[in-house]
Length: 419
Image 1 (cartoon, rainbow, N blue to C red):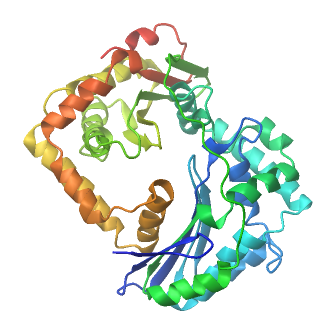
Image 2: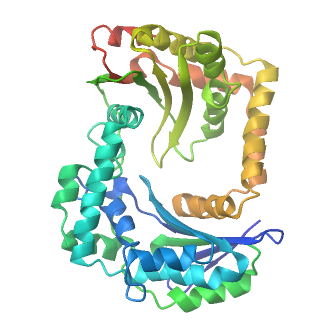
């Protein structure tokens, strides 16, 4: 499925040949994200990602960068998460050389001019304000604060208005000097490519890149007694809620057991939450569950948007579904969940961007790559007994957390958290 080579400077190159495709996708991953930041640095990874699109020595403006890719019909973007940062590009196969030149130029030669920093600072503050004005996003940030209080994992990836406004160019340059190093970088490419030629092309662009080895480490999260409820009153038409429980880490042996529990609980229109809370009770238009897997922690979170008067009955309906998962899942439902998981995974592998993300993300976070076949084997090995045992272990009353954004008061909400 893939081939891997490490250059002399420590940069890892991963290629995935997809001879049937007309596209090539390049993902450049850096093993740094918001959890590596101190409170003073909060948002610096995200800020730097924005600034790399502002201009380089070769392409002086954001327009020059975007036109270089959009002018050949390609797609260019980036993203910052809690444990990694990615810059990616997808182009038609004949334009690979341009795409690689643009991405490596952005990472190695961005100018970080003061005028650009000040303009982007205002943009990011507006981005933070936009997120806080969107109740469905705000409630997700509040539940993170409950799951990981006083820890970078519980903080918005973009930081705060205060930290972004206070950040200096010197702080940014110090951070990038340590974290943007070849030893901390993975270049993953998928499409109609030849491994040897790709490695040679990358060596020409970044083979001379040298930098300090990565020096920052992330603060380990140690679970402790946490608050269970956060309510932010807003005059909204809907009440937005998140119910959450601590989950498992990225490489936990029961990760795929929890993944299947999540599929059954709240992924797709045939999930228990969708069928019960939306179809049967008519309480929500949007109700679903999702997982976070980090190096040393994780979470299962359920989101719903409901009419304010239905908040209590909605919480009770969701908690019933969590309780029901402590019993054995019927064989037919388990088979459906496995086939959904495997099918979605295999469908992803038809797209060069998804394939490059699959290999590059795993290499960055884990230092190794599982094949699709290995993951499918682990999914197939999960039993109904495994799932019920894990549900009884994780779905505990004292671990429940609830965040609410809407016109509701918090009286009595904690008393609902019973399973």
